[in-house]
Length: 481
Ligand code: SF4
Ligand code: SF4
Image (cartoon, rainbow, N blue to C red; front, side, top):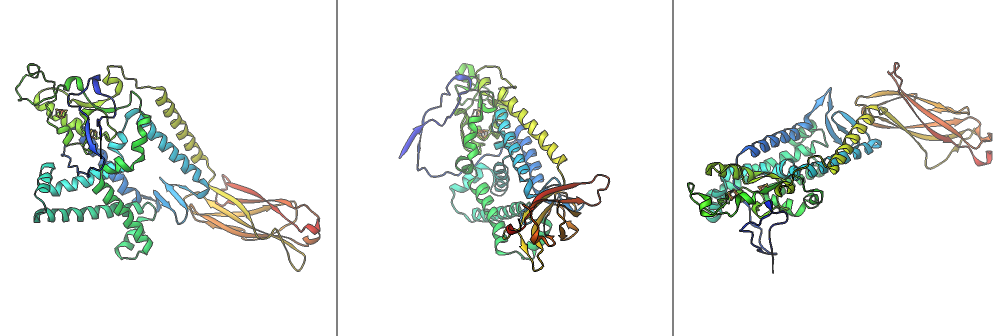
């Protein structure tokens, strides 16, 4: 079974059709062909590698950050406290984390509207790791031509040895990624010694091996297939594009008609454009597409083809690269608008959300109190006719350091408090404190029940008392009412 169609999915730069833009017939059951991209250097790739190194540093260093003994970043699932840049969020503040995710998503959308797939090509973890795996492969197996030659020659001893070495280094890399990843959820300074002494449980071992396998297969083996078939963002981001979004496009007007020629030949006299049809822009492409066929969803915006063509144009003395960062409007000679209503709207919304988030985080009360009544009984009457109500005070300490809290109770009845007068709660922790209120001789008291105010006061804050309170109900027997 086969299907016919052009590889092009979008605008033809400059409005004209490339001469070689003939429909391609592709079998639906075509075998996956390994792409062997050519290594390319150039201005954009230098910047891309700088960004890559910065991102790798951030990824590997973040779990190690500590200040005054507190972790900089730790998503501590076991103790249900998330720390981001030394700001700890307890479970009741998870709405703030959702808020952060919303800001991150809106920022990604805004960047896509303005700069197209710049996230995919420059900062997506899949792209970054693929580049690292690919760099190792190139170092061991050689560049594109050497790898293609080796593939043609079959399984020689040298090829087997190189593959084995590559797989070993890839596996070590995958483990380093996975252990660091787990280090975002478990303190990495405790995790590493336990790994070194094989002191891990079954589930912990699985939690490390699974992401390692995912990284090895996803970024090492499948590479561009993950972008094509598994990444949902790659599919829906095109709806966010507008005619001024940054795209990578081929300058048809300058490039066509394409054709080979000698370096000293005059293209005009041969009736040719500037494209020498060297295929270098195709060979460097990590997704294996020909950008001269127009904008395609497989293009991740890595700019490798720009650097490749810059090199070719320079050698030929033809000026700038035929492939460039552009936009649909620019390709069609329409002036580019940087400030678009949608872009300004999104950017304003992000600024407002970030401002509000900062205000909420800096003004939040550093502790919380929730009263939970005993679910089994509203009250209990003892042998002496005293009425007892039981509560659990859930005290959350949102600060990073531990604190002592004094507990006070207010009620219109003369209730006797039975529980600790102070309690210590570790930084970012939640303490459940069971307490009891007694109404002595309360069996005969006629009342509908009364409100009881529980108040906790953080000790050591005399100059600026920090107090929170919560209200619950004190119940008495029905027959007494
Ligand atoms: S690298 Fe430039 S000159 Fe070579 S095929 Fe691509 S567009 Fe044409
Ligand atoms: S077409 Fe160019 S920018 Fe797009 S993925 Fe290929 S090399 Fe990268």
